[in-house]
Length: 219
Image (cartoon, rainbow, N blue to C red; front, top):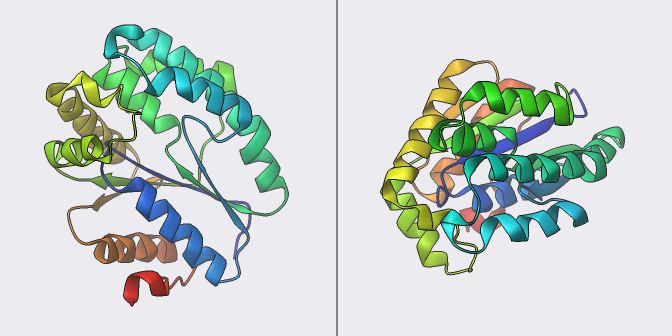
């Protein structure tokens, strides 16, 4: 088994990332693998402060470039304060979103272009990349309704509307197709157990890790 790996779960809002990252953390813990669960935007004290600016308020509050700058300010703090220390301690890192969200939301759906995102990526965090990115793919309108129904108040991106979220889904599919070694596109329209089983099978193939569904799902 190779240590010091980072697994990211991406997708449109409402695709089930939160549930699946928590299940993955539990499965890894049950298997005796040291791991942490983190998220973006956020994941460290400083980055969580920036999250508040990004996910609350009206959609026109920031344009795509300002969003991107805030995202990478948060990402740099997240990497410095949380991700790199965990990897240095030999822990697996599971993250609900990472840099591909900036590529999808600001670069493609926000029409900045991927070149702009990559330039800022290199300036902010150099060439750091996760080891596996799982993209949960689901009908964007179904996902949007799920996200709105959560009612957690963090709804600035949901307020951007159906067309924007259609573009985000297409963007993630485009990104996933760009590098089959790094990305895995998974159908997230099934049950929680079905989606988790696909994720675990992908991780076993990639890292030779045998994970079992937590009892809370199989019971």
